[in-house]
Image (cartoon, rainbow, N blue to C red; front, side, top):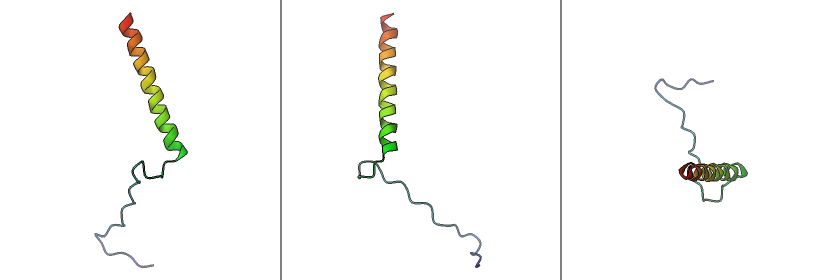
Length: 52
């Protein structure tokens, strides 16, 4: 087992690919749908508060 010289660091992990490149997973879709649902609920609640 060789010890790397001091001061060297392992290569950083690869950055995740940006959305829209065909790598969208089911979890990504659920995450986006959750955000849309929360934003919709917040908008409806805000409108309801304005009516009071």
